[in-house]
Picture 1 (cartoon, rainbow, N blue to C red):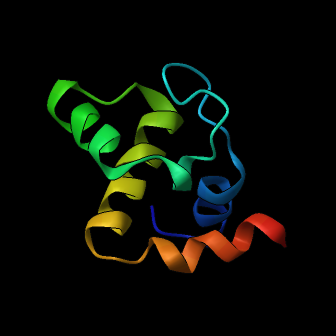
Picture 2 (cartoon, rainbow, N blue to C red; picture 1 turned 90 degrees about the vertical axis):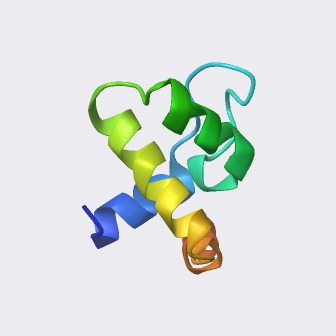
Length: 71
């Protein structure tokens, strides 16, 4: 799950729906990701990426992904 392609997707994929539609996944607030954790993540690739994003934010590693937005 933690591979280069997923990290690039976190940096460049916009949230497709909801309050933060259009915001890159890596830029979603941790509180929003925690809400998904409680309510249930979406099915498929988006849900897996959101889980990864939450894990990176909890560990303080989201700053490693942010530079990939501009590569």
